[in-house]
Image 1: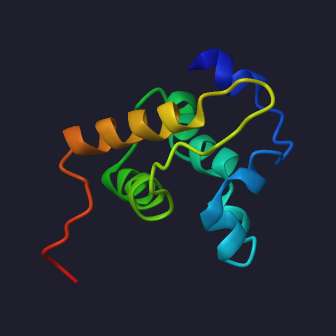
Image 2: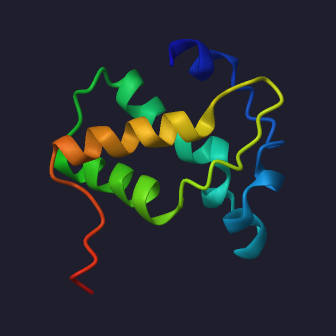
Length: 103
């Protein structure tokens, strides 16, 4: 994980592999690199010392901006779906997950 965070050069080449990015007006918040940098990257930089609001924001990214289709492609070999899945696991431990029975 540390290595992947270090080698991401934010080149945006992964963006073209994300159908959410491509179908949502190429909004940068849907770029795979943006998703993992603003979830696992934030948790790593802050050494897990984040408040509930930050976890809610991370939860929004990993649950609502990614369907975990595993189509992400990074030319540097970063396993982006694995990073998003880790973000989901962390959020789940804090009872932050997508609730389908609520609107």
